[in-house]
Image: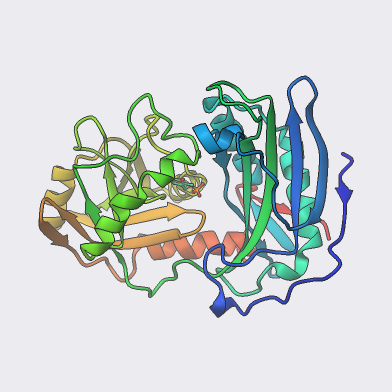
Length: 354
Ligand SMILES: *Cc1c(COP(=O)(O)O)cnc(C)c1O
């Protein structure tokens, strides 16, 4: 694949990891490609990080035809760099595109773009355990026209942000609020697509939860406000005695790659993982009665993080996560695979050639 590379004249000074927030800093270059109806994807290139020029009629600004991905490049024990499951992100990007009437991006373009960009930004990949270089691919509709229809042109871009560990074992577990007056997505909507509209509409509800003293939202289904679905923008697992349960991919849930990795890791260790509906009432009864041993979230940014309280209908349901929790064990196992200090038995890591 012919990818043009234009090197930035000046490199930015890199921040110390403790000054960095999620996405507050970006590396020196970005990857771009454009799509034109009739021509397809063209002009793949790496160039200095900079701004887009958009016509005010660009369709994305009006009707939200926009999708994104998120994945991390990790510093390896031997000094190299590797990406965690990028083919899964490429496939999910295309599933999101299909849902949003956007053109598929060839997987090879996604992977080659990432490889070339990250190889150039080697110095931006943090060495600290748990820290990473977060890649954020985005695609959006650019055609200047106001009709609600497929756009004739799209922009694809990958940017890279150094990120500290979002959550580490020992950090305080999270408090979640389940609300019946809002929903993340409904059946027949686009909850299983990583598309912008699913996120902007949650900010008001999230601010409400934070004002009430909670860290995040425990989303319930939109039809009955009865079954748990996700936490903020992460997937959720519940551990009872000898089994782990997570809501099934109903079409309303984002198919997290960390979710899939955790399920596969647990099953390979002989744990029973069930994908089934979890009613909030039963979950709270299980917490109050001591049958629920832990609840944890999974996502690329968070990796795995434990929960210590759920609020619902004005009542708090606290519980004490076990100190030798499954969440901590999974966090350590996943980060060890990601940093190349444990055997990659699933073939999840993709090396970036120097
Ligand atoms: C991205 C995302 C997740 C987590 O997916 P990963 O692939 O594990 O990062 C979960 N829920 C929502 C709504 C998301 O957007």
